[in-house]
Length: 334
Image (cartoon, rainbow, N blue to C red; front, side):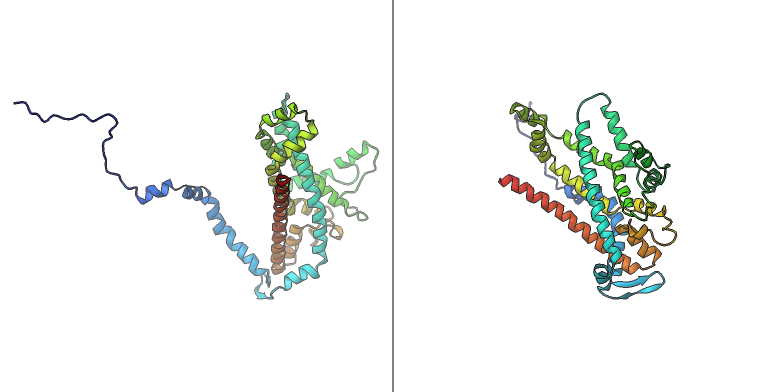
């Protein structure tokens, strides 16, 4: 006897009904995009929390104390900050030096880096070779470069800088030891920044590659010249990169340390307790902090200087961001 109950084939388009399985907690965590982001930055975050956060808190606390390594910190309130702002001529000299140094060095880094990027953004034989040659020097930082430029700016006919000046029949300059013109050391410090423009050049070059050629073709059709194209197309579209490079170089120049320290040693001042140069002509923020902390053994005052420098850096960074944002919105409204 043939059974009438036969298997009915599934209708087209009908899916077999399976019970929905609720994902467990581990699966939900693995699908969380925010958690993935935190996992990616966790090595740096853990290192900062374990090795960076506590020293920052300690520095802020010690800035309100009189403290050295041999005695317990004594709370003195805002006295360190009052002395820095009202009774410290060396800090004022360092501020003057930093205004000159940071302003000139930032202009060199931004203008020089952008100029080289515009040149190397063109197609010509050896383009990649010149990019490499100009970028590699920016990787060699620290004391080695400071020692190199100390030899370049050596006095007499031995320094390469004076050899170059001799080609134009200019007398040799005592760059790092001229007691009648101590500001020449600051000029030499500023000139060192030409060595590092390859770093900003590479970032600008990446930004230029991100600008579509369509904009330049439209400008050529409209009859715009090269100068007008640069100001009306390249600069506005490159504005985020310019802001990034400006802030990066600004912070880096405020933190300059090795070059002035090594340059000051040419006058025999590091070993005698003054890494700031003759008449503090090479005084910058970090070398002054170094002197107060490790030579004068005044860690409380050095901590207050560190907090002050951090506040100055933060204010300047916010000023750059506010200026760029204001000019950007003003152009849009216009």
